[in-house]
Image (cartoon, rainbow, N blue to C red; front, side, top):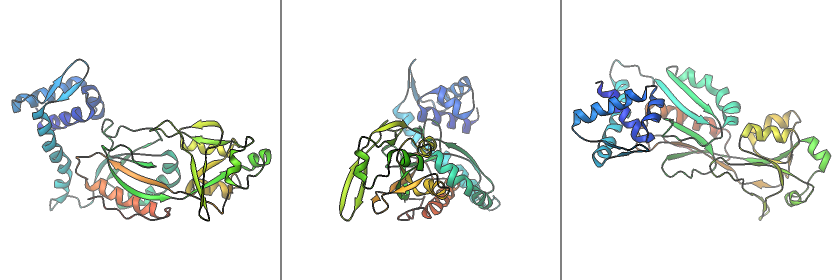
Length: 310
């Protein structure tokens, strides 16, 4: 038995709650994962997991062992890189998931700079607006707009992204240009509704001007849960959009979108990076967080300084 493989297998079973899901994230067969955990239990002479046909539960001894061993495993990379003759730069695979527009417009174009600094870090990036099971899918971190509602994750604020209201020229020619946010409540106007993956709902936007605030609901002809498709719907003239400035800017420059209600402000969208609890923040994750925070500070209303070692 390879003790480290067995420890990793046990940790993944605890975190995913399933031998099958653990095997998938470790790129092993379910049989191999099962055997490794059984061998670990035999070595320790302890029952670490209770197994039924439907679920796997960690025992009291297993929970205590997990708390200790996960710190050991997550510290191995740091121990290796701290040795006198070890490579000074962080290295290894980093699994991240980010919103698709953020990936396409900001992160990916800036990645050559990141890889110039850290050539030995391999990024495995998911670009989506779906809900990601950070622990179950063995993801190192996710970046998401809006407040973090999953209290099981550690979260760090990256930025407050300024928002604006936009519409395509074709839409305005067809329906008319609204002069006041409340005009969007009129039966002639339509919005494109962004449906948040974590709740399945959209939400009203609050706009402010000279001490007055109005809440806009609006009627929609399309509700969508992907940022790129949401943007495409607005450019196609399906309705009014609320967009972060970084998404709107290139389309405004090309005349595909026009800003509305420029005297009004919209509450900025918080942008967070979240990662699993009970994990040592590895050097590779720490430098990625610092790099993303510096990148996003250029697009933030109120730049946020964060330290990944908190």
